[in-house]
Image 1 (tube, rainbow, N blue to C red):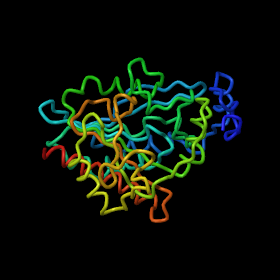
Image 2 (cartoon, rainbow, N blue to C red):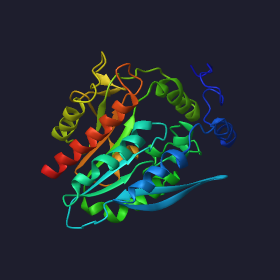
Image 3 (spheres, one colour):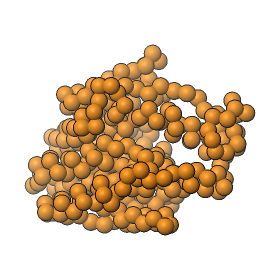
Length: 305
């Protein structure tokens, strides 16, 4: 496979250097605008919440202010919950679902929980329908000390002083057909590895933490989502994207070891949602609704336990 070209950038079997990353970046053109889609929604949310800027991404000539939305009357005596979206900018319902939760349901938890939402962690990727940031780095493998990703470092700095009170972190993602057609081949090419085709699951699933599994919690979230959209079945190996299915619609990753976003709070309850927007049974609104259902079910379970 190493001598077979499966991606237009780089030499098969050789990891990318600066020239290949520059060529890749030059191909990433904006197709939508964070300033048009996300920032006006945040402005409207100021009526009911505190909107805080927690950093600025610098990708010359582009600059992106990073915003989070938090309960206005933050009470350290209450449990706190974190919702993140758009860690992978192209995963649209992660961003829109987080914003929809803020607009429609977040106020329901006033007096019961502190809510912190970072709805678009990677605006450069959001604008370009891209998984990586401008440095060809995956923010969702970069939640580590001395992070190589600006997006990840900024979010970790925002959350650090609030970690002790966090009972829940739900990170909103999608698994798309473009994972197989673009992003996995790009990853293999970037790292100088062969590309092995895989299967995209048709439906919603969750990623639990191998080091802190919470099966009843995951099942409660899936039960709520199932009222909105279908849960992904296992493949013929009883796997979803190469990981063993531990319960219907649930797989596990070692979150901290992989530097995944859902590891940053150390909360008892963590999950990563994976919506499948390319299903013939899905619509953009249904995907957003599934994300909101997951967030609410997760908060409800965490507060009850």
